[in-house]
Image (cartoon, rainbow, N blue to C red; front, side):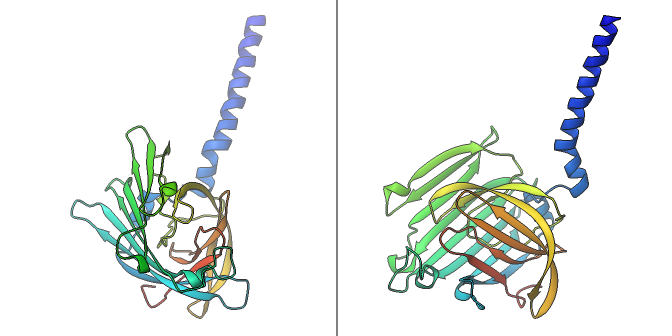
Length: 275
């Protein structure tokens, strides 16, 4: 009898543990669906170029426009997907009123190239930062390359300061999204309220990688292209900043805050460039 009672207790304990694991790790995906990753993003990608206006949100009625961005999605001959972006910002307008304020106009350019394999996995990411007044040579190069051991090899290389040279190898899930920090996201398909995911940000503003937690928190209405539009509100949180993204129900990103410290930088999709 004691032996049977022990077996029953073990079985009950096993069922409780299995139930907790199912509720914590499996059930949420059935309820809200899998969050965005590179595979879903490239499957829904629309090839072409998109233009964005970049503005600083000072909390007033109208944001200050300080630059523009372009992102382009193309398919390579081997079926890999190439995501390219180019961002131009006037640092005088960008940092006005902050501790990084500059007296004269300084043009920054950020270029990012992300290559996704036909299987929907990150092949590599490379970002370059240039200052127009300093010529064509990048002042900072950022690279992220997955290794065979589910790790990501991150390198920051600077031509102006050895303090910005940095290397770190972090744990990395194969389909996890990695961003150069300032490039726009064109689509976030398949969103549902309650989804959560983590993205690695290779932050050019601080020359360090940072992990950002994202969550789809609600459906809201915003004005875009002169019309009220229902969008998913996605909140992003990290140690040094928070940001938001507004995504139309079909996955098209209409507005996004960039993950930048010191200022709230907002990208607004140009409705003339691919609606």
